[in-house]
Image 1 (cartoon, rainbow, N blue to C red):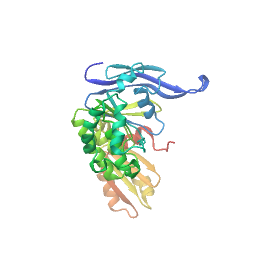
Image 2 (image 1 turned 120 degrees about the horizontal axis):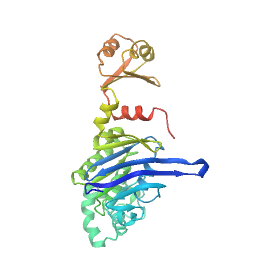
Image 3 (image 1 turned 30 degrees about the vertical axis):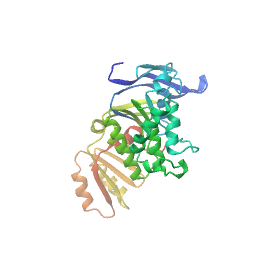
Image 4 (image 1 turned 30 degrees about the horizontal axis):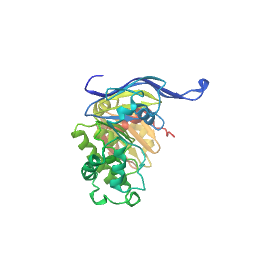
Length: 310
């Protein structure tokens, strides 16, 4: 592993169940994170994202494949490797028996840090999380956004090189999400490396230098967000809805689109030349429409499908 690679995963496989009915969760997965980048892992529910993170952290053993993190073999050297890692889990697992500052202090002790060193770091961590005024507050006094910011600050208590973030903004309102994004951008500016899983495509497009899309545990696309969009999706999208949308779609949209889809009551027309579609819509009654550039959500839906996953 070169100095520029902080996490390397090669031919990773993981399955569960009896030998005659194995459920393959991770299927020959390979990728690498460069130092200082945000790398996103996208996929539908059950695609294997959280299992991948657990394997990388040494919390679950792989059936086969190799993982190197911070120059150490995982899971054999997972414990010392995790000393240089921060983790933001899906749910906030803050200790309700301690105040905001005490949560940071106690968590820092898990890394073997002296109390004096942790206490010296707490003011900067509270400033980073915009929680100075809540230093002595109990956890049940915090809003959801505050808890999420504290969980992020807690993950930084050991000054990690690599930070795992498993859906860090799920359940937050737009203002809280944007604040978390700004904090993550600040970490990247400091040279930290972020491994991010998310269901928010705008989040991945804003933050990730590179990303991978996985489904059923297999890698189905990898690259820079805009490059992947250009590679897989037509440049423009026209979304049409309203009482006459489907009739218009069958009579006009299907024939004038490079790719045509119907989802519920909405017609999606993917094209590199939207003008014929827009000209027709201007003279069609009973329809409304949105014309926009293709985005990461279009890519995700094309590669993984529109059906619901449990």
